[in-house]
Amino acid sequence: MNLTLQSIPSPLISEIMAESQFDGVVLDTEHGHFNNETLFNCIQVITLSNKKCFVRVTDLNKQLIRMCLDAGVDGLIFSTIETHTQALELIEYSTYPMHGGIRGSALVRENKYGELEIGKKIPILVGQIETKRAVDNLINLLNCKFDYFVVGPYDLSASLGCTADWSNPLYNTYLNKINSNIPTNRLGAFLPSKNDIERFIASNTQRPELLIWGLDIDFLKIGLKNIKL
Image (cartoon, rainbow, N blue to C red):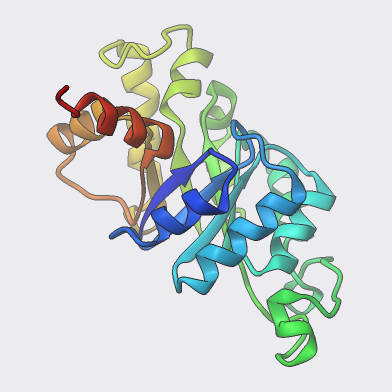
């Protein structure tokens, strides 16, 4: 699955990105500045374009998680997963009781306000591994019911004291631990910039199941730089 990341809070951006070759769009509430109404509108645009819609959230914000799921997102990406307890709480709150969680049911957009079966949909849940603590707890995290794990390279390198130093031995040791313990069919990579994409293509022979390519702001910058005045 190939996704792209949107941080500009506008349904117009969602529409443009949903018309691209990507399978779907990730709406980033971690570094983007979405309010609830705009976020809901972006989810509508993406899903009505028959593309996958994910939202990245930073913590157990119950109101935000409930709103996104009720709006009909296909999945959630949880930033900075570090402990087994934290992971279980996030998964439990995002899952209906019939699938082992505690999520509440209502007549919402997800079920077409009661036209579809209520309390049944299973969202795709993704844990983002981006700290030293997360990698140290990786074996326990793998026992949680995340569909995928995505590496956050910038925050991981920062937590190891070598921000964006991709040749640093300590960073590569931790990255190798992730790659050697997470099966390819549950592994993802986050590639926010053109340089990240080029470095990934040059250094990886095994393609993860989930890739998040680029960032709307970076695409805009590249386009502007390519204009010859």
